Image: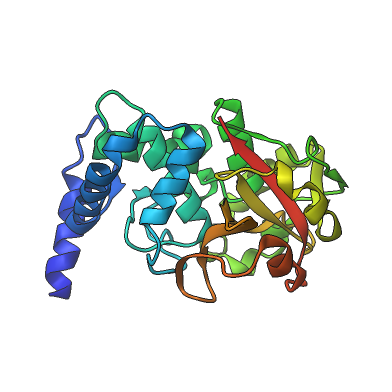
Length: 280
């Protein structure tokens, strides 16, 4: 059975048209996409923020699995039925973008996913992946897909520094195996260090949460030196309380967080506040 599954994955990879970038997926993942597409097509006229929320709600219960992209060689890898926090946000957004197209299909979904995940939409090597969430946000913002509203709704300046990956190369298999990638990552860090950043401190979230809407991307600001974002999810108002939908490494699946946002983050010592991104 394991041999058969590996063969199917290989066939899906190799049968991609020579003129198209390679994609790693299984027939089960494509079938899962088709089922979700059938469910969501009647709602395709909804605004983007509502589309991502409806998609996220349909993915409740999806297992949390870390490290699914850490495969060689580097290429777009597609999973619909297992995810981590950033891949969950990315999946829901890519799927919603696909729904807005005239003829949504799996190929267009893969293209939208690639454009979000890789620098300039090109899967060249590990370093071409947008490994810092801030760069993921910036590229999508430059494409007109979203905008950061942290400062606008009450955020204050944060002296964000990017250096974690190049100062902790032993934590990344690809960087240990190919040191030449480190300089490429360092260039991305230098680029990110040229911008100003804002965050909403934990103590201030309650006073400005009324300005946060369903479908906004909530980014949990990390206090780890050189690192930007520790976790992400979609803002979700439930029974008058602001919480969020996310792939939880505690509950090991996609959930609507049981605690309100302010209560949740108050218990996370490694997060000092949030950044808020609004979809367009």
